[in-house]
Length: 174
Image (cartoon, rainbow, N blue to C red; front, side):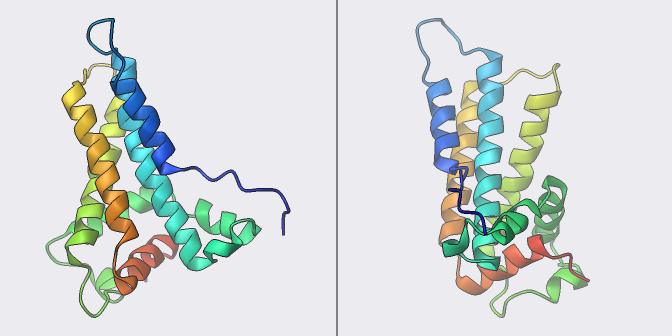
């Protein structure tokens, strides 16, 4: 086990950085680079909150300096996250997902989180890779609020829903 302190990515720090970009005044409208960065920070704040929750679930919050915690954290790709979130938003769950559904179902909070991931990932891709798009401050603020709300919902999920969601991310269902 490593004795170094873990430099955990704090979602709220990413959100605060985005807030600071949106609060800049004195030079007219915000630069597109600042708005684009806000979309990126919104998505990455949610992404890292989910990865932290998954590694805490699998290895343990008190073992964050353990290399196994880092292994769990790094095991979830952006594509895997998007795929699972899209699957959870479907009107009818695929059998491979339904098999792991908690007794009370996944519930509205999971569907909302999944929708936020999908929406924010799409917005981040557009902001980072599509030079033909321009962005509005109102949309950037909305994306940031969506991310914060999803992180809050994640923190207060019922234990069985949280566990099922995070394990579906960590392990490919068969």
